[in-house]
Length: 230
Image 1 (cartoon, rainbow, N blue to C red):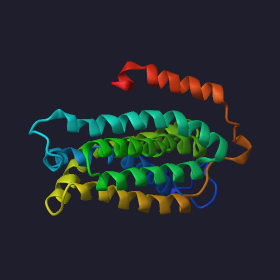
Image 2: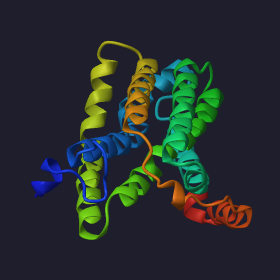
Image 3: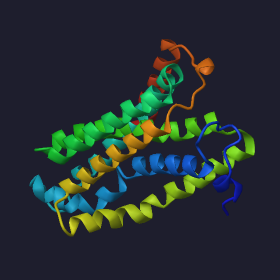
Image 4: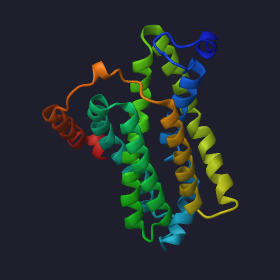
């Protein structure tokens, strides 16, 4: 059940004009953007096989999901230290730019190989939204209030696997699979505008210098973790 005060009052650690309703809606949009890089595409797999002359049931096309998740995993390592050093807003906008580039390249991909590379780039960009939705919540809230906000956002995120495939099916009913990717590009552009208006949440006093050693160690952990590489 949603606590009424989370929708009606300014956040306790959220100065300025952002209401709880605004913050929750923005964070839910970030979570949804990440999920919409996977779920709407699933109904399009057969059409993608046909485009690239793959046999019916050829599982190689499912790698467009696995490489996206791989890019997503790598991005989690990169965006955290950058967001602590340069702030949430510029890092999020950079990630959304990468997301848009990956979606655009996927939309125009002339081959499966190109599509796989573009999808990895897309996932790398999506990691910014996936990671920073939690980071921004921590910037603005504390304790139980933060936990409630994150739980509400996760509730919206869990709707993705239910709603997104229907969204993909609706597009496929009137256009090709490429426009499923194109819709993600449009959504990303809208969210980028929203991110600019939302502004920065990291107090300048809390910025941290980049530390190469821990970042490289995190990279090594990702690359040597079997479940991530798989």
